[in-house]
Amino acid sequence: MNKYLTIAATAFALAAGPASALSCLPTHPVAAFNAVAEAEESFVVLHGEFDFDVTKVPDVNAPPVAVKIPTQFKGKLLTSNGFTDEVDVAVTLALNCAGPWCARVSPKTDYLAYVLQTEDELIFNVDPCYAFAFANPEDKYIEAVEQCAAGDDCTPK
Image (cartoon, rainbow, N blue to C red):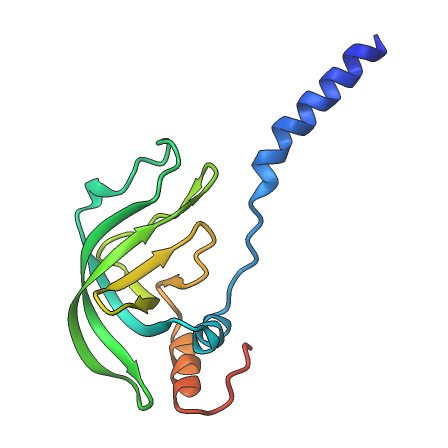
C-alpha cells in the first residue's frame, strides 16, 4: 500500500510540476525600458498596431515551436521628445515558446513594443512572459516611458 502511495505522490508531483514550471512576474513597461537601455543590442520602442496574417500564428494546442511572421507596424516611434515620429515599417514578429507555453500576439491591437533593431531588420521578440510586449497599455505607462526617454525619472511606479 505504501508503495502505491509513493508512486501516486510521485506521479502527482510530476504532473503538477510542468503546470507550474513557468512563473512569470509581471514586467513593468519602465523596467522593460531600463532593460533595453542597458542591453548591448539596439532597440526601438514602438507604440501602435502590428498587422499580420493571424493564420500564421500556431494553434494554442500545437507543439512548441518558435515562429517568425512578417508584419507591418503602424504607429509611433519613441524619441527623446516622446512618441512623436509616425512610422509605417516592416517588422518580423518572433513568437517564442518555453515548453508548452507559447507567446501569442493579436493583430490590430494597440501595443507598447520593445523591438530589436539589427543591421537588416526589426524583430519583435515575444516570449511567453511578454517581458517586452504590452497590449493595450494604459496612458500612465506611455507617459512614464516618454519620461524615461526624456532623461527624467525612470523608476517603475
